[in-house]
Structure formats: structure tokens, C-alpha cells
Length: 202
Image (cartoon, rainbow, N blue to C red; front, side, top):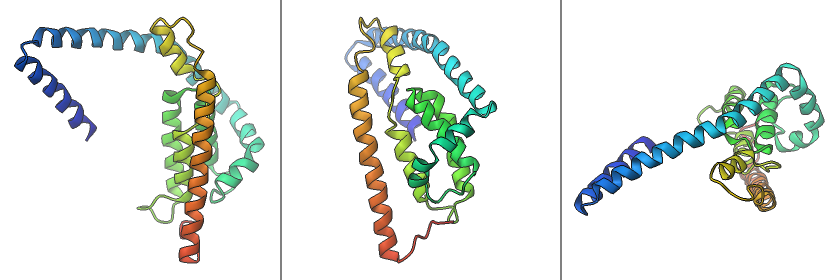
């Protein structure tokens, strides 16, 4: 669906440019934007490779399993449906750590892996579980200690103080996370009360 939307926007832009007699400006803007996109991608490549590599090392060295044990009480409250020691918990931890460091792109494959593992213990494959809903909320509103991607983007665009947004991001992400967790817990309890049981519990 998004592909159709992007294609439609591009075609519409060219049509409007032709109608207004400004097709040369549209072409120039497209070329300049492509150049900027490539420059930004190359600028972000080093940061992404660094942190993705560190995540891989952390997983193979067993550090992720140790972190999982440390944060198990918190994750146990957030994800009571996940069995102890299940691979889904490790994938969730890795995703949250990546998001905590502000590495949204690096967290994406980890998030997909976590959802895949959660689907394995989903008794109703056509319906999202409470754990899936909670993970989606945490992945979307993740608290970011170091918004590395945004800082890299601001640096690439020539910002004089690329780190000045850190405090604002802390406040915004913490508020979003608290609101999301509260919403998931309240809605899951309401569903349990209405049905007299939790239908998604494996």
C-alpha cells in the first residue's frame, strides 16, 4: 500500500510541475534530494555498522542472556505470558537495548525476530496476544538514552549542537512509554474481566 502512495505522490508532483510550467525545478529538486539521501545514508552507515556489530557480539558472548536475567523481574511484569527462558525474551531484550541506544534501524530486525518468536507461542494465530501488544508499544515508544540516529542526522546536516535534543527526547519517550504500558495493561484487564478469562494465555 505504501508503495502505491509513494508512486502516486511522485506522479502527482510531476503532473503539478508540468501544469505550472516548473518541471525543471521539480527535476532539480528530485536530483538534489537523491544526492542528499545518498550522503545521509553513507554518513549513517558507520554508526549503524558499529552498533549492529556490538549487538551481534553481545548476543554471541552471552551478555544478552545475562541482561535478560537482570531485567527479568521487570519483563516478567510486562510479559507474564512468555515462558521462562523462551527465545522471545532474548530477542525482546536485544530490541529494547537497541532502541534504548537510539538505534531504530538496528532494532528493526531484532523486533521482527521477537514478533516471530512470540507468534510461535500464540494459541490464536490470527489475533495479537497481550505480549505482542506490549512489545509493539515498547518498540514504538522506546525510552532512548542516546538517540544516536537523530544525533548523526543532525550532525550530517551541520547542526552546531546536535546533542541538544537529548533532554527533550528523554521526557517525550518516558511519557510515551508510561502511557503505552498503562493502556495495554488496562485494556488487557478489561478484556479478561469481560470474558472471565484471558483467552491469549498459552
